[in-house]
Length: 126
Image (cartoon, rainbow, N blue to C red; front, side):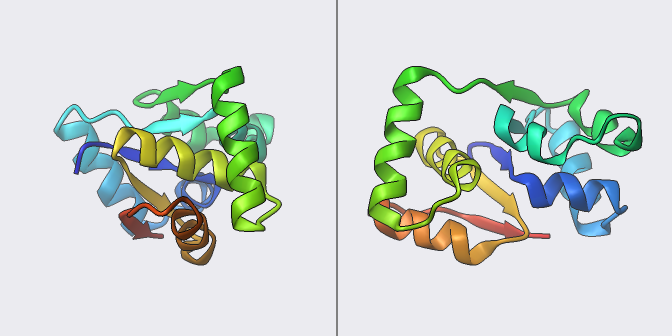
């Protein structure tokens, strides 16, 4: 595994104290493998002062902005996959580009996007 990318479901799992999520996150921190969180994921999950656990997670993550080139790739994948969820597609596109595993609560969407891209994607469920 090259790295880890969190989707919105992963951050929500963190907020709810999900043990599987925290075990993966602690492992990543122990191995100095800082997970990637696409900026759109942060926007979907963040609820201000109610997001204390998410803030804790973000201290050891990289936030990935969406560049124009990535936005074009995401738009193309939305068209190919038939899935009208730009945040999920951004998660999958970035993870496939980096060779990351995705920590998600929505395996079906990630599989649909990977299939449309013709690529493999390692999916870790929370």
